[in-house]
Length: 240
Image (cartoon, rainbow, N blue to C red):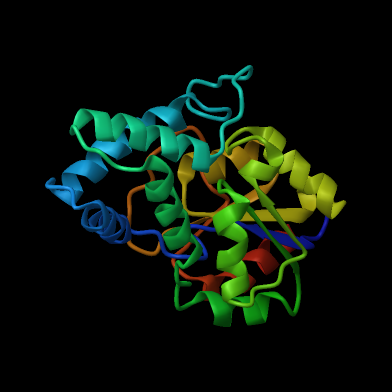
């Protein structure tokens, strides 16, 4: 086995926060902006139902729609607002609502362990980010925290979503490395662990809040609760 040369990270809920409370806050702002007389959480849940359907049927979704047309988050979220506004009989601007979500996603904060962890990691390994995201919010979020990586690849740029293996192979081409040299770190057992393992990566599942591992498709090669644990884990992978 080759020595690990590169660590590739998921972005949201791995590097940056993306909690339900943050989404509720966004929908609260949307309801206030348009003066909707509807519970923001109810609107968010309706919108989320439509967004979940999109996730299930997109390229890389659970139904494995290989011939599906790619749709960005911006386009999908817009459509979800159109449908949600119709359900609740609301007169709102789906473009404006979508742009507000994109703005909030670009302003997400880093987890506290990320910066000190990356300082140690970057001394030894190349790093990159591979995320199911649009460039319109992913790039500004990384730049706002002055994060520099060897490469950043979004699903929008790759025209594919994890866990489809093609997005991981695209990253290998960009970095000009073999899968056997790479570790992928992410919070999602299906999109991150299953997806990266399909492409031949070593995988690390980051679980900061003691969640259950929710899929029996594949096990991660390692589990961590903080970025600070990662250097020792990757060093051990390089020895075997």
